[in-house]
View 1 (cartoon, rainbow, N blue to C red):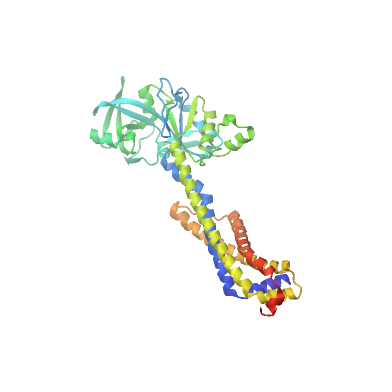
View 2 (cartoon, one colour):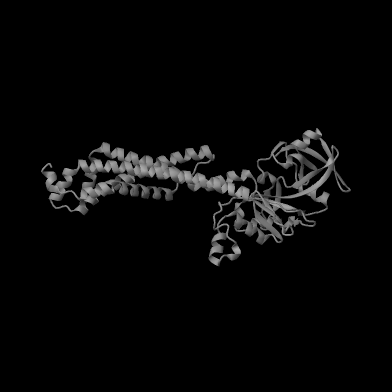
Length: 423
């Protein structure tokens, strides 16, 4: 009988029910889109942020004098402060190995070139290097992954080949073009490199030569070594907990900290697998990522709150109007023995049915909106989630009950006699 009464009540006044359902559907569509994008935005933005460059810097522990300016760590180059290239495969054995999207060792050597009397810096690194990992797999990485904003007019040098890139400023001063031969000298070592491209980085590399790490090692007589390592990793924005010193944590906090992809926790794990290194978070990059991600998520939460508030107000207005229109029916039900609880349950059941229908329609519309936003902003649409669907139905029910609370309370307090007398 109760379900029959609810169904009969829903079938009456369809226009008002349709307006209530439409208000709920639109509100839930906005919340669905915001939730779907918010759940996906962390990983998407983390991939986009990797275009900003490496967020971790690995240096020898022998460089013990800390000097941090503007979020970048500067340390003097000490004699003999080099790290073994053979250990780099261990980076892909840490707990967060899949979050490391690329790394590139660097060694800088001052050289003389035939076209300039001044000393020029030769930067030795990997362009696209195949690294053998401890588990037997091959991992391809290099400066192309860590510094993806670098633009090369021509082609990259091949690892191990006597080839190089020339910074655009140096190339303009030296009148050197791709394909030209460049004679360089470091101490009593001479070498001829073929220029394969002109590099535009917007940094000091525009006045430098960039070549294979093996070339720099030969010139510096440091075979199998490098000076510092840049690591690009997908990370979670750091909060106060992330900045705590792991040595002061208890076992539970240390496990929670280590199992979160903070830049600092990844740096800590790198120090454990690479002996004799200091791992530093490049704060300027990491904090910029966290600030942008926090602001975007805050904007999405504010949009969701506004949509929920608007839906609650629309449901409340519709419920109040429905209760006023049904005064006579409510009074008649009370006159024949229905209690306030029965009346309230009947009206609440009617509103919840509208909530579930409106929530389901809103979820479908929200997924379409989320896919449009995802494809326009990130190029990849977020996938539908059963968790989001359940949350949306819960929000729809909560918003409906909160919006209908005052009208339902007023209906339960109606006195049947005055209403039936037409007062």
